[in-house]
Length: 172
Image (tube, rainbow, N blue to C red; front, side, top):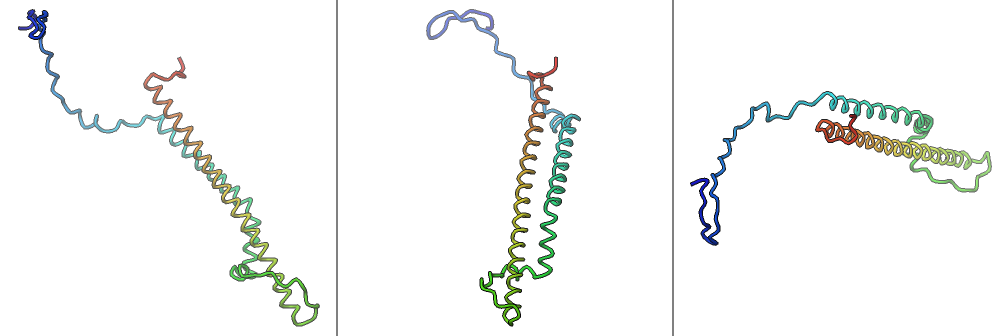
């Protein structure tokens, strides 16, 4: 009987018999709307939009600066490609160091080979310049996107803590 004192069966000490705890209330499933993800608040959506805008602006700035800094090199490459063709420039070899005498039949082909070799060397330099800037701007863009994502995650975390009332930096 609850509330009565009885002796323990193993040590004979007095024990107060208590009421058994009430059974837990029956579990009810929450309504469907409560089970779904809560709607995003406006500040979170605004942060994502701002981050996307920053990334688009940084991408446009990188693309514009890349095109500006490589315009001469790309123009030079197009000119050389139109003059000789890419395959001829890739196959160009350094001509003999001894030049035939001007006016001889061997001079004209030698001179064309020298011009082709010089143009192939210039084409290679232009390609290297464009490739180097391409890699540099791509790396710079990726670093700036990572920084933007890091800042966004920090702001979202601070917003969650502030909403929960646990932010030590919260304005009081």
